[in-house]
Length: 129
Image (cartoon, rainbow, N blue to C red; front, side, top):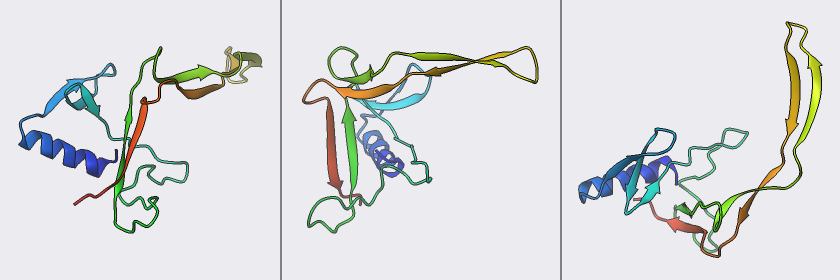
């Protein structure tokens, strides 16, 4: 979800006494409720535009402002993850001119994969009031 919706969720959970802050494996604070973590996607495309906007208009016939929330279940064996599409390709690039350091180029082609029907869900046209 985007930052605005995450702030609303945090506020709602805190007001209802359901707010719980956990630490993930990267030592970041993550808001959760019933073991479901809520995260600000916070990513931008190469042009600097946010990927999850507060005003998505992709629902046919819907002109009201709304946003999307994505639920993703990550599990290496059963749900979503990455799959290696090609073998790893390594090439020696030679020494750097600035000193006795050698360079190696590594090309590793990965792709996202979803194994289960209910591994990725999108709620769209959520009205942010």
